[in-house]
Length: 371
Image (cartoon, rainbow, N blue to C red; front, side, top):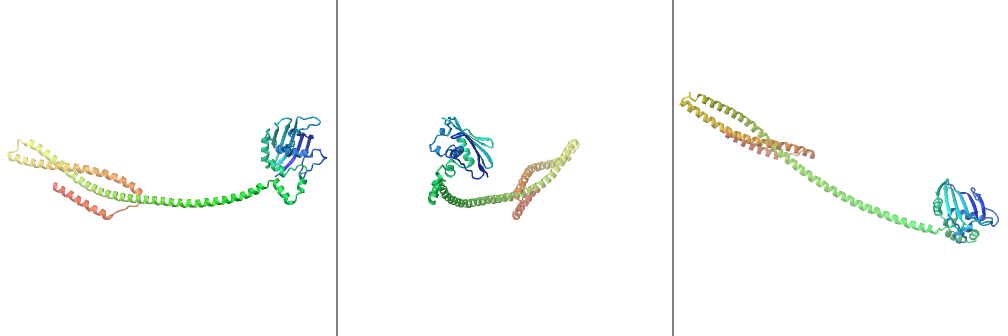
């Protein structure tokens, strides 16, 4: 990291009409007779960096005294300071105008304008670049004439105390103590935070466990309800399947009865037709015989009509049960998706089977009686 003042140029600056000084690595010494302008160079260097210097800051001199007045009064004075910092080249220009407060300042980085012409903007930029303000520079770096002898005459302890005051080291000691206090406070806060996080974590775990248990209980309850509902639907489906089977058997039987009725009706029609055709030729005795037979056939036809009505009622019931079977079948498929395992109650199914068999026997008995 390079930090070096390269060059300073003075124009109409006190006794310097047009001066340029170059600096090299190592120690640079200004020599000359009293009044040659050695101190003026150092003051100009300080002014270039910070826009002031101790004598000006203390109002021992004013800005107009900086401008050359011999042999003639000049209208302005100018200082240029070139230096390297962090591998970059900088140039500061400051101009003081006679009888005016509106002085100008500029700073360039590698030939590019960074700030200016307001001196305040330039001062802030320089402090930012060199990381040093005027107070520290004037205490630690800059020393006016006859100030060095003052320190050499002091005893070591007083000299140390004086240097501490000059360098404002007391604030760093305060900062060190404050830093320790802050560190301890941060440590305490971190411990309290860790304890709080631990407590909150325990509370969160307990709450989460409680919620999981509640969800588990709800799911188990729902599973039980679904199993019970599945079992009930399976039983109902089994009953309906039996009923449908019985109705299918009855339908088959009534179809046969229907066919028989149709044949009987055909036979009656044929007989009636024959009777009409032969009515004149039939003797009285034969006519009575045929009429008796006709009466029997009509009676049989009436019974068949009754059977047909019963059949129609059963047919309607059969269709209703069939639709219900289809609906139950669809519901059963959905239940199978929810509950993978089938649960069957053998004893209840056997009991229902016996009940349906009894019911079927009663229907068969009723049909036989009607026949």
